[in-house]
Image 1 (spheres, rainbow, N blue to C red):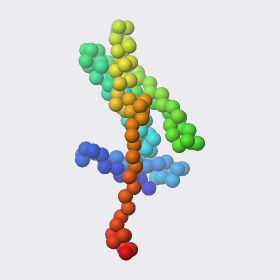
Image 2 (image 1 turned 180 degrees about the horizontal axis):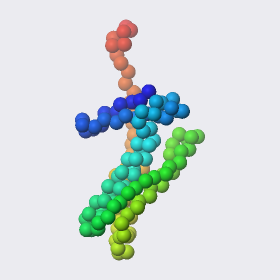
Image 3 (image 1 turned 135 degrees about the horizontal axis):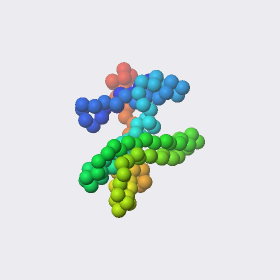
Image 4 (image 1 turned 45 degrees about the horizontal axis):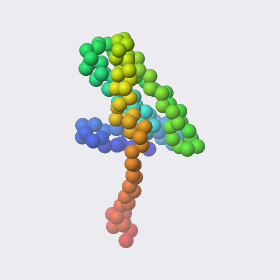
Length: 129
């Protein structure tokens, strides 16, 4: 069943689901697709900021391929590709450093503390005493 996930901004909400073959209804992107899209969007954002800061014009698009290791239940690789306008040779290293500095990329390179809290409804709310 699809999960409606409240976003930090009350004007947005996300529908997260799994493909039909994985027990979902395919009502929205999977959590893995959103995870990868978050990285791609962050990298592209930092790339666009760099271009604007240096007065470079042109389109920047990004996409990714990823691999899953089902044995360990994790992504084993993500490859982000940027199609960027021409960048002067003297700015190429700085551009790469800028796009690799995005918050999502940094979080993947140095894993953050992650806690999962499971909360249960009170016995009175569930009808049992």
